Length: 482
Image (cartoon, rainbow, N blue to C red; front, side, top):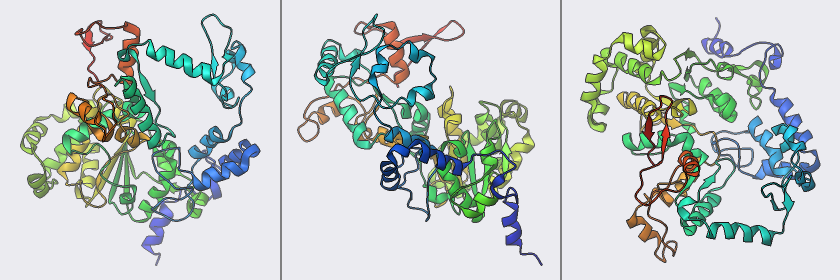
């Protein structure tokens, strides 16, 4: 008789044709060869970066080509593509003296020109940039900063490839200059997650680890595509599947990489591929809240909630349950874009799972109701007691390597280092010799989007209203500080 375990293992294979030769999918071995070719002029340095450096790709931290969870090589095409940014030689800066030819070049060709190795300045009316000395460049920057009101200076930092030390230095210098208009691309991505998680569970970051994926009964991916954005995590998914984990995907689009993938560092998967998601739920764009309320309604009506956890660890359940029971299935189906039966199919597996983890990303947060989307996910997990136990949790997955570090180091408009809120008390505290030795401003800064509005609308008189922006209907809505 055939071994059931062997049958289940075979059923996870995509195809018996080696390397998926007849199917379209990322060719990871081709990526490796391309990385070798692109870095051929600096192969020794490139290998040292991969061997000894931290990954500057996604948010999954690795040391060299290994991590702390599983053995063997841990490397993905995102890191290989970024490698050339670290090894490329200096560009011929004379090409910048006339920008007209550069306008005809595409971004990829421009990046291949190399690193800018000397300071250059372009003044209004000049055909291009002119090389200056470092002394001239620093003096020009200092002159402009001295002549500018600190309220009119904005500081924006990227989230990819920066270290915690760099974040800390940037925000500290900005505050020394006298501005709290400090923001990062990471905050723009996950501010809704931060706000919602703080309000609900009191923790502004993930409540579990990638190691918890392996052994969880159910992994749910909402508005995220790790196959493209965090491909190294697919090795975790492979071992999670081997351990019996089911994978659900909630997304308006069926991501092919979440359906099946050839994981290059796992021999079996590299040969035959791995089927990942067990079920897809094709909700409307923006249909997250009605979908999860529908799932919660099924949990309540079928008594699939964890009453003990709810009573001991949560507040406000009675009001939520009353609201959920009053919602009509017609309105939930219309808003979610899926049927009551689809929501039941999700709820039944979720309600019977001993433990589950929900992973989400930009598809959840970059909405007008991003924080409410996250709160709907939190409600679902709390209803089942899926927070604070092994193989359970809430995981806002990051697309950049320095997302959490930027927040902790204080690269935020409304908080100093270690999430100390910007206010007079903390400004005085940081001004003591035991901290910075200079007093930072105590007024709350603007986020990146509001900085752009402020730049467009010009200086505001003291006591003036906050910056405003017109909405498509022609009315004006207030933009609160980030």
